[in-house]
Image 1 (cartoon, helix red, strand yellow):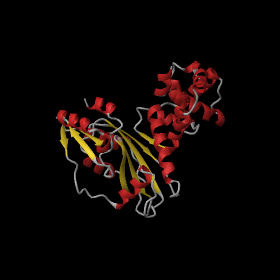
Image 2 (cartoon, rainbow, N blue to C red):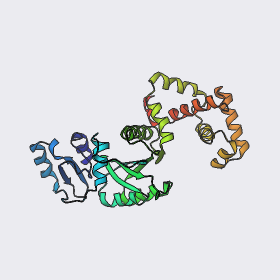
Image 3 (cartoon, one colour):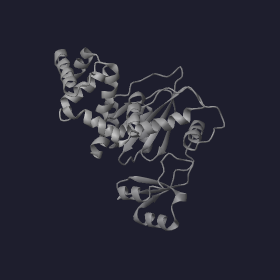
Image 4 (tube, rainbow, N blue to C red):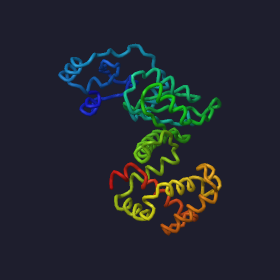
Length: 300
């Protein structure tokens, strides 16, 4: 039922942490909640929703930090804050698929994964961002799959993260924030099973998402000789991701170096694309991302 409501009232949905708006909250028998911007629902719509579900009163007097207000003002409302923001910072974006009922517990769990937390915002339902100060207390912890799996198990939702790059310019920080959000969306579309992305790789996905259909078709045509050999494609992709280092790629794939070398030569022979040459390697890597993406397969 909530899924249908999300579609019907998409224009009125808001994030649970949004204290800038008047909230209208409903809850079903399982304890799941939906948050609406009170001003975007008609009187009749609110009456219907409160008849079908329990209406929950927003928590009043919830403490909101000055940092939260400042970053909300800048990133979500495109308004210059009253005070100068701290830089450098890094954004860690996350996407939640499923019904997240324990917002407070989830927020605490996510914050515990990182040091020097400035604040955590919810730009929209299901999309959040941790703002991390790169100060003297900053520790560049590597987010790994085990941490994401633990959150998934604890809160019964599917999660994916994008770890952004450091931003040193306060003047351009909002534009970079918006670009990272677009990159993250494109990356999830191209690699839906991947749980952790970094900005550098997400940039490739974003570039591909803006390609014309004819270009995507040409990419597929060039890889047609190997389109059904998934093992060969994955071997070559790993080889390229390891900077054309055969030994490193073989170790990562748990195969003998000669085995990987044979697969590389086989790919070159079948496609006539010499991936040992850097320009070709870059092009083929993008082709493989398209070939194996959800979007490309959907467009076929």
